[in-house]
Image (cartoon, rainbow, N blue to C red; front, side, top):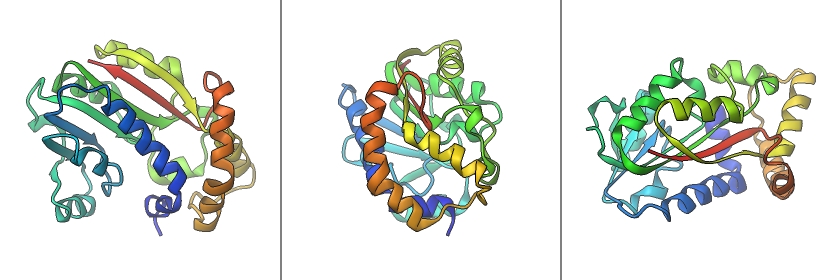
Length: 222
C-alpha cells in the first residue's frame, strides 16, 4: 500500500486534523467558497462539503482527481482558474512541502482569498527530522516556525497561530532514521502509534508546542 493509503488507519490523527479544520471554519463568517489545496483522495475535503456553498479541490494527480470526481467534488489542477478574492477559506495539509516554489504557491493562495479570509496550513517540521521517507514521498523541504511565518508574511498574510504538533512523533522520526527505515509506512505500526502514542503526544504538546514537533500548524488571514 502507498503511504497515503496506509495513513487511513490513523483514525485519531485524522480526527485531530478534521478538528483543526472544523475549529477554523467556525471563525469563517462568509461560507461561499472553500478550497482544499492538494486534496489527495479527499480525506479532508468532506469537512468542507456541508459547510460551504461551493467546494473546490485542487489536485494534480490524475488518479486522485478521478477519485474526487466520483464523489461529486469539483476538481481543478491549479489555483489559476479561480478568480482573485473568490475564496473564503483554504486548507492545505501536508502539501506545501512538495512544491518547489512555495513562495509562489502562498502568493497564489493569497490572491484567491478575499480580504480577511482564513488559511490553515499543516506541514512537516524541522529539516533535522528528514528521513528517507521524505525522499520517497517527494518532499522538497521541512519547515520551522520562523521560516514559514516569514514566507506567509511576505505573501501578504497575517499569521494568527503557529505551533508544533506531535512532539513524540519527532522522537519517532529520529528513531526511524537511526534504525534505517525503508521510507514505506507499516500499517500495524501506524495503527499502534495512532492508538497509544498520538494521544500522549497531544498531551505533551501542551507544554512543548512552541519548541518541537513532527509537524507545524499555522493559521493566517488574508
